[in-house]
Length: 153
Image 1 (cartoon, rainbow, N blue to C red):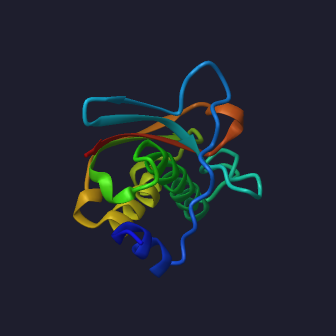
Image 2 (spheres, helix red, strand yellow; image 1 turned 60 degrees about the vertical axis):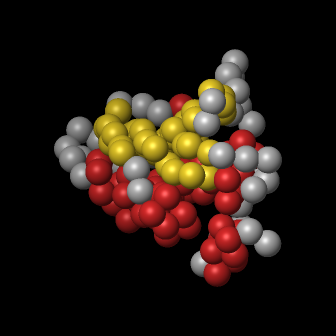
Image 3 (cartoon, rainbow, N blue to C red; image 1 turned 60 degrees about the horizontal axis):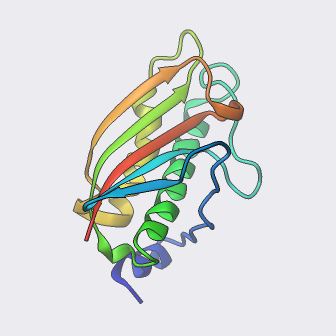
């Protein structure tokens, strides 16, 4: 078993099957050693976390939503690495989008749910540059969406 798979088992995290695109795009594109992963929404087997942060979704739930996005990003990374997450050299950048209410300003705290997961699973290779943006609406009403650029070998 790989080092990263051992780490996933240690923290009790099972990656889902990668989510299929819902429109005319691909889940990831590899260019050289960089993989650009399309935005992953806060979706899980129970339907995920939808809503507007600061209105009907609280900060703690929004952070859990961002973590779900991170889990889905890891599933896409695994697919991009032909099943071997040890091929991940570094998470280069995350782009986080939060469906935020008019008075909600803790956007970075929400996206930390994803950022913290990357470091928890990948260690220093999970440290990354990042954007955290509040938006009016996200696809299908999901609370959070995160995309990524990842270097692999």
